[in-house]
Image (tube, rainbow, N blue to C red; front, side, top):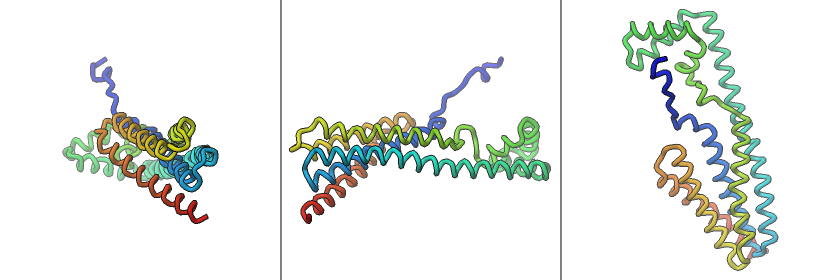
Length: 233
């Protein structure tokens, strides 16, 4: 067997499906739960209500993330299936036109017309639908929508993220509850941003700054509103 067939490269883009769901879920878990706890604690500085609000936020958020991801990614999968069915019909009814269409794509990418037609010939002879799905529609195995995977990863990562501010509530004294949750939330967000960036092969600093800024803003706004409501009532 030739060496190039034995060599398998592992590209980071293959992680994009589950990585996006995991980072989004964990980030939302930390931000929403920490913000919810801070809002309740700012209105009524007691551990009990803050803990109940955090647990309720964890359960509701995990279910919401799972349902939202499943519906969203299922819609994407439905669109992909419809496009593939349409392309299959076009290949059956107009194979010559589809061949020219595929060859034109390769010409646009830099091949000579003769070589583009040769490549189209060989790829369509092997698997015409796969060739058109990949090069015309942009659908590949790496980027294929997986609703169940996205829903499970989102719910699990949200639960893990939401559990971190809850842990801060449990271990911190009442007088330090608000600063402990806020600082813990920001620290967890920074770690998440760095890990997500490293996993995806990107530089961590922009990701850390991005999640820290938006996380701090969300917690500050929620705590401020909670304080105003607590003062008013």
